[in-house]
Length: 254
Image (cartoon, rainbow, N blue to C red):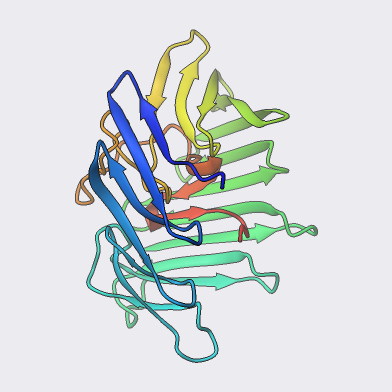
């Protein structure tokens, strides 16, 4: 059936095992034999429970696949009130978070602009908790220019081969030039970032759903602590992580 049954890291003595139901849906993940994650499904195919999140409740009216609530306050998802707006062609154009639905001030915002071919061409994020604003210009998925509110600029050139990005050439403030090579797993997620000297400068790891894990142990980070700062915002399946919102931007993937 082509489903991945397990993956091993022989150097770290780690083995992750995957179990599926009769419909090829992932139901259980075990790490070195111990259950790490379970997923339950309803008759409609909707996920009804994830052990790291909780129970899901869906709309009972005209939108049966729309999540209405999740029980409790799982630390794996944002604890703020999150609002997402979409374009007429079903791509995200605005995300905001605030303390409560009644709050007038946004704590986090992200705005995304699109070109004539519905491709993403710019975005601006504002984090009023840290005071950091980032503006990003995107050119056909091969070049990005990121500027913060201090005036620091980073230019990223994504170097591609037939099987995707293999390196990122970075220019910081039009002075410092760096080339980092990207080593990926079977899904295209970043495993290792290696510098021009062949040294590993960062190792990443993700579970089956894209949640960041400790690459040394494959265990989840404590949600109450600050995650290690990634070198790049790309990660799971090489898509863009919006860590402030605890989301992964997988543009219009279905």
